Length: 603
Image (cartoon, rainbow, N blue to C red; front, side, top):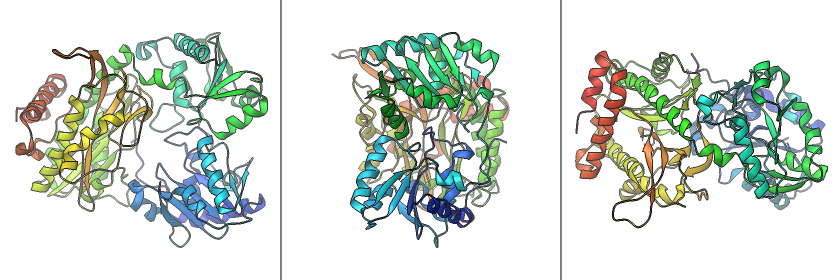
């Protein structure tokens, strides 16, 4: 079992650890301290040793922050975690506020805290966030202090050890390109920008640029690492020596100097007088401080690895397609189980999550889940990022909907798929809302668009059917996905907020509109798809890009209201199901295979 359903956070952590933190703050002359969720690597998933916000408050959500003072503490979490944050924190000790409004910086700006000193850890904050904190502190009348030792680290007596998983080569048969050639292209890009080196702070970027993978972070095969890429194609790679091996050293070759993590600070000092590219959205303020102190000339540029990593090559696309077909077969077996055994009303959310995990395990090549399975029955389905625990575990009761969002990590690809299914007979409202979501999903799957189009331009397509009914959803419509890397990656995104990165051939994005009726049910339909090269359209004047689907698993035909589908949408569903049967059918036999054939019959 790869999932842990015993939540490790909870109010007891705040009751136990806030006094310790305050003692450590007092020893450093701090009246307050800012606690972000992010760690030194800005990872989405944190190793246990870096989950500082959970240690201090008990809140284990993947986004949030806290302001801790000697006489009060305030935690900030967004709408995804409204219930969780209140369940996991002690209301007598911690006040709950919203994120992003007011957010920690907005809240601080409204306080009157003259002559107070608030500390922050420059290794955990980007310079952009630090600038906002400085502005808020000025309005509140507080002095800011960058700490050398995080007071949480000082107070955390039983802090888990840092992960030390071995770093292994990612074969070219999966990567599609030699790592040396990748870095040579990045070196050429640095020269064009007038930079002599780039400091790469994101473990995902390091993993891609060096064709390596690790196991330091749950659900993402990442090695906790840093790198300095130079304009001659050579590089310094910073890893703990325990993670290395002869095979790794041979793989890296002579152009890469493998150095221990303790060498990172002096290595930054070696960049004195050089023009260095550094990403202010990914690198912490500490990197900027160290490079400025060393006398380097910093150019604030996007991580040069991000865009090449996002635009998958032919090998990566082929591998991802293969991974999705196998994964789709496992998911189809699970959907058959949901349609038969799980209709009893006695199956729980945890039972279902484990059953799906077992079907993926049966494939024989699952390396990890790509995230903790969102297994939401009834009202829990209305929480887009719900995480089931032994304390919250509901039964899949008849007359309700069940939402499952899950994925796997395979050597050749990363999957992420959501399906919503009825348990028992669905209501007319359930069918109507499901069909509106499906109409938005089809619109985004079928769109053609010119070069230069961003995800923001397309987001409205997925929402339009819901908007016409006076409905909406409060999360993004699509995120980038890696290839045996993170299930969430940039720089592309499909969402309401502005994204300046055009969708380009080879980019993988999710297509996941939804609808959530609080306290009753949630609906989301998610497939992954990738951007296809521009092609001419008969009678058209400009070449257009489009999307090619990656995810293959039947939709819930019992939830489709045919009267709401246009003829073109009706045909889309039939064509999709025909292709599901063609690709998945040979891999699913017995009763599940017979069920799949029924599900994929024309509407």
